[in-house]
Image: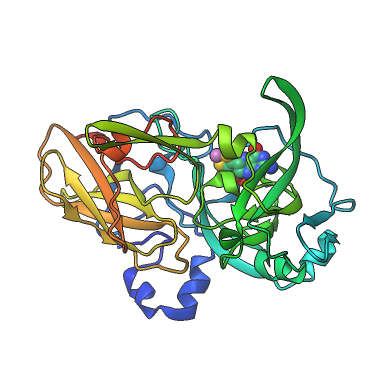
Amino acid sequence: MNLASGITRREALRGGAALAALAFMRWPVSALEFASDSERAEVIAFADQLKASPRLRWDEVSEWITPSEKLFAVSHYGTASVEPESFRLEIGGLVKRPKSLTLDDIKARRKKTIVATLECSGNGSSPGFMCAIGNSRWSGTPLAPLLRECGISGRAIEAVFYGADEKIEKIRDKEYLQNFARSLSLRNAFADDVLLAYEMNGEPLTKEHGAPLRLVVPGWFGIAWVKWLSRIELLDRRFMSKYMAREYVTIRGEEKDGRTIWRETSVGPMNVKSMVARALRLKNGTIRFVGLAWTDGTPLETVEVKIDDGPWQKATIDKKHVSRHAWRFWTFDWTKPATGEHRVVSRATDAEGRTQPSPEDPDIKLKRTYWEANQQWPRKIQV
Ligand SMILES: Nc1nc2c(c(=O)[nH]1)N[C@H]1C(S)=C(S)[C@@H](COP(=O)(O)O)O[C@H]1N2
Ligand SMILES: [Mo]
């Protein structure tokens, strides 16, 4: 069987460094990826209609690394133009040694490359908002050592990341020019693999994805990955911008002692999630479902598939495991499909025992804003 990237299982088992190197390459793919020549598959279109991002559709996802031109983009204040020559990253606020860095200063620092899945927190919230997700190779310099060099005051609790994009926003009835901005607690900002990134998939960042510099926060929803990064400010209190505290907030209820307690939180780490991406009919009549699963960086434990009202059955997760922040492909073979219309759904569980909820789960039923949507997504198929 061909796996995510087109390598056969035998090749995959040779493993090791060669595998890691292979995983970074791109393969030309056919629509029949995930089935061998002898299995000779054909794609079965799902009967449900999902409007996807104009760049990517679930049934087209066949590469582990999303081709750069297929990655979605979300820019709330339009696309900022930042000249690399005049670019400066200012680090200030509660630091003993403020800094102003050129792009060359940043590129001269230790370079690190990671593979991480970028997902908009609205992804999968409705049939009209799908595939705002992709898996990319990000290169840049780690944030933590740079912050340490600035000598952070013991009073600081947060780092605020400002983009160069700006807009006039109304706050309590008055208008203010605002830069797009999000904060992370120091604990989250110091996490391994948080990068000041200047490359995506081995190429300089494009303008729409945040050139010349963006924040990469593996395991966090896209809103935290500030593009056109221009300033970092250390604060001794919680930062409350529009995209921290008024938009991108999740309102969730919890039933307790006969009443509902509503909790409003800022969008944060990603949730364990999976999706049935496509269906292949093999020559022997088996229907092979191919899907994806991802987490906040917690190891993925299982993916299970349920057909109609049948039991949950374990899918086979692709062995390729180059990065804990990257999505993983999985497959499930339905060996005796009956003709007619069927419903197929997947659910992922992480190593902490957190399972992707069904749409009827209180976790989703009592969620009143659309962000952080990780409900199971049933697909319809006509056999
Ligand atoms: N400066 C800035 N950064 C931003 C945004 C923005 O509007 N301005 N949008 C955020 C959102 S909501 C998402 S989902 C990701 C999308 O990243 P991409 O456009 O590179 O795909 O960028 C985030 N970073
Ligand atoms: Mo987003």
